[in-house]
Image 1 (cartoon, rainbow, N blue to C red):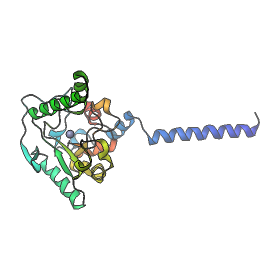
Image 2 (cartoon, protein in one colour; image 1 turned 30 degrees about the horizontal axis):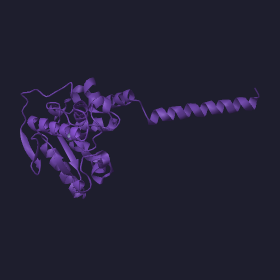
Image 3 (spheres, protein in one colour; image 1 turned 135 degrees about the horizontal axis):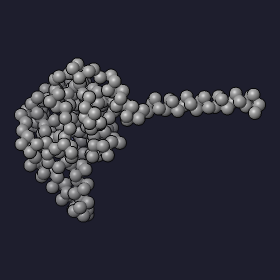
Length: 241
Ligand SMILES: [Zn+2]
């Protein structure tokens, strides 16, 4: 090989190497993101102690106890949340409004009975649309949690839309991500202890479709960590940091 060719080959390999490294830096694997979040975490004794009561998983494998009870307080209109996190939500709504962003709560606490009704109604609707009962059940359970595995049953979740949402939609859809309300929540919800609980591309981990409208209270400390990492709560909770 001519010396000139060697220089070129070396240069090309070097550029490839830099390129690959850059891609890894820009798009770290989930395991790397999790490690980064954990490394920047104070020791257990230094963790924020407040709101640790709210830091737990509610999902298929971790249902609420059937004797679960919760103290409730109104957050907006007749919608209610766990009284221990209601002030955080109210402050969030108030601060958004001060910037001209109206956050409209369309669902918050739901009783277990209400949850079952919602699920049954949705299954009926899907069956009217031509789904078999098995298909309808499978699809409905991906979109509406069964009783005891919904964060709404715990009084820890808020579904938020725009005030004029229903003028142009018959349903809650991922279109919400194109609103100024979503942009505001993406930047600010964690400051009030709320996370967007079912992020895009993690359907297999959370068991739920992407829900840009669903916000779950986990406390300010963990909300910040979770937002920073872009990972769903399941990843954090499993590793118990
Ligand atoms: Zn929800």
